[in-house]
Structures are given as structure tokens and as C-alpha cells.
Length: 384
Image 1: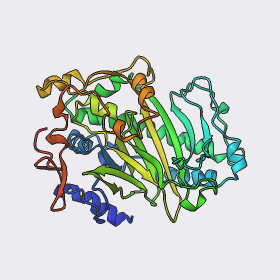
Image 2: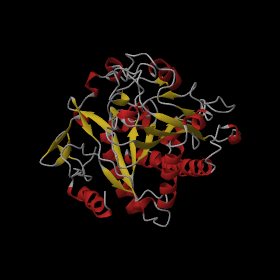
Image 3: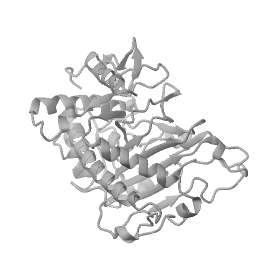
Image 4: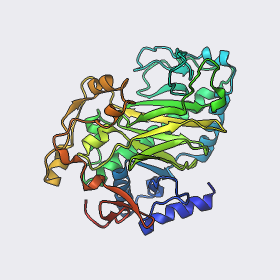
């Protein structure tokens, strides 16, 4: 996408439209975060910005541009990640995931065909290199870094740090957008510091399937809504992400200059349904490989964290809580292995109100304008 196309796409927000030029693409909101930059302290700019993010959060997935992460770092990061996945398989296997003291999950590399060779198995087709960005109180030297690509470590750690700052700012802005204190969501997941996991992903072409896989899957990563608080995604221009709406899948048009956010189930619960956890998946590229990087957000103390609608929000809305409280780790462990199943996918929560699928979740596109219920998205002057 050219810079001119990007400017035209962002400019559509002022007209209440988030439509992409390609009609087969889902019209995700694009929010310009110029007001996030430190030198711009105008409170009116921030107010307008959090209102836009509030509306985008109701969709559940949106892209932010001019997010403050230097273009040079992003270009270097993408380049070094491609170099890593192009390394010989033996070198990547030497970086295989390893349990590390102080880390929530093993860190390192996992291949796309890891321990899966049944002829009828439908594979989640991707290679991953994973690190823990925060908390960073572990020995980074214990991560199985590639010896043939020394620049990989520094670039990945620098990127993770930048994403931490953007994540914290987004959590605060999304809370403010609902009329809450900016720490409303952060307090529920443990405060200023949170668990960040950074997954660098490569999705090889279909022709890269091994011969023993008789029925290769066209799905690189299956349909799901996220169990994490939110995921921030950086990708190339190949595409492959899809979102589910009106009983069909829509492509998401990639914006390589932007960062795409997918709000998770906990955000939908904490916002009492004001924000939405969107069902999405990744399809396998046919004629090209695909790169993306996902920065996830989770509580540090998963075992003790209880996710629930923010009481101040429930009170201000004057309606009962639509979601029951749940333990983050308990739900994560009970659903994680099953969340690609359609029955699990459509029953993400125990709800207290069958009307949770109310007008705020009634999304449609009419005359090129994205609507929530009867209201055009982007009409920021109306109350929620």
C-alpha cells in the first residue's frame, strides 16, 4: 500500500467510513495515532483520539498507524526475522523451545510440523520463534538464540520493548474511551507491568508441505477468538488474516506500516460487552510465504487474576453485568486446546444476559459505511 493510499484510507474516518477499496476486504477501522506522540500534549487531541479508539474497540479489531515505533526499527526487524526463517533447518532446530526459569512458557523455535505426521492430521501451518518481552526478570542468555544470526536477538528485544509501550498506552486509552480511569483495565490484570509474549511467525507456501501429509490444510492458524487481553500484530503485505462476520470469512487488507490489534475475550468481559473479541484465523498463502509478529498481553499472576466487568462501567451504564467473573488461568487451561472447535468458538463466555448479542454487536456495511446497529461508525458525537 502506498503512502497516498494510506492517507486516503485514514482520511475516510472523518466521513464515517472505514471501507477499504477492495470490496472483498473487511472494513476494519484505521486509527491515526499522531496524537500519541509525546510532543503533542493537547488534551483535545487526546480526547478525540480515545473516542475514535472506543468506536474501533466496538468492532474488536482495528489498525493503528503513526504509532510512534520508528520505521527504521520495523524494517530492520522484518528483515532479520526473514533471515532467521531462511536459515538451514538444522540451525533452527538448535534453537528449539526450551523451558527457562522465570518464564511462563518455553522460549525459542518451533517448526510447523512439530510432532505431527499423521496422514489425516489438519496442521496449524506456521513456524514460530517466541520470547518473553515482559516481565524481563530472567536470564536472556538462556534463550536458544541462533548462532548464525547474531543481530536477531538485539532487534527482537528492541521491538518487544517498543510494543510494550504501545500496549500500555492502548490499554489506558481504551479505558478512557469508556469514561473510566486510564488504569481500569491495567489494575485488573496486575498493574503497570504485564506478561508480554512475542511470537515471530512464518507461514510457508502450500508447496512446502511434506510428502507424508496427504491432506494438507489450507488453514495456517485456525478460527478462534483470543484468550489473551489483546494481541498486537505486525505483518508484511502478503495478507492471509481473515475475520468472521455474517456467517462468512472476510480477508483483512494488510497495512505493513501499521499495527493491527485484536481485542481478546477478557477485554470483552471487562468492558461488559462494549468492546468485542472478534473471531479470526489465518489462511495459508498460495503463491508466497507470509511473515507476522504477534505481541500478546496477559496478566502476570494468572492463577489469581479474576476477569470481570469493571464495576464503575456497569454502574455508569445502568445495566446488569453481562458476564460472570472467571479465573484467567483456569479458563485458559480449560479452553486453549479446544478453542478451534466451532462449539467452543461460539461459547466464549458464561453470560448472565442472553441479550449480550445486542444492538452494539449488530455490525453491517450499508452504502459503503460501517454501522453498529443503526448508527454509522465514526459518528463520535453520539453517546454510547
